[in-house]
Length: 283
Picture 1: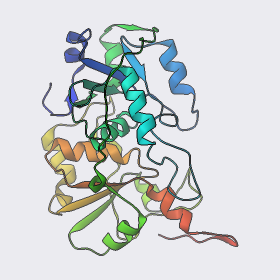
Picture 2: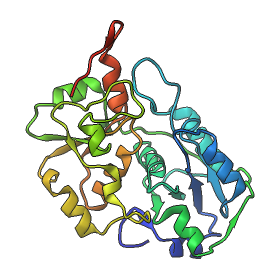
Picture 3: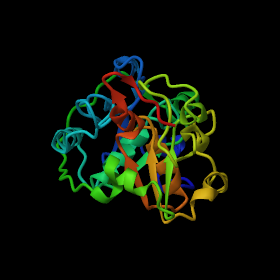
């Protein structure tokens, strides 16, 4: 399954494309065009792949607080996983996107959060699959019947109160996965306030992959993450708990497991800074 325990190569997947015990899920998405991913999937996708949408399946309705992509309702998601034919801890799931793991890592994380650990990310994503001219089609696979009982690992998530308590702990590193400019508050393309959680560090999620969408080598990842591996616990966040999952994925591939996801991220944090008389910026 490749050099990393949670990643598979296009060659491996192509060799196992017709294995009924493997389910492939397309997670392509664009934040600025919510229907784009599904349209692309309908046009062409890896043969036998199903589609799960960040907004429709991997998140739930947004409220005043809680961030832009709250975790989905467990029952709705598990029902959807069952219709794909996923049986918990039996089916091997391979997820992919075309965005350097930005969206498929969210599903990778969600499956593990719900207790299913046989989930892998396709190295190089959709682009690499196409470069190899491996099989694609526009057929939507028929539903199957799997069996999936969610057993959420609540220890792997943290809310705003937990993050506040962790801010000054010498044993916890809070890592912002957004770009350096967003972390420094120089720019904010999405949320109403620019800035970052005080006392947080910054490892941009794209640092973990090459521009072509391949996971960097274990030695490269260890070099990136070396300053933080000494901490007994890492809290990962981003804008809304999506790209932070890429950081968690990278850490897991080099053997660091004690990560908590602050799902609400900066979009939740800054929602408490918005006052009726205007914005209060916090850096």
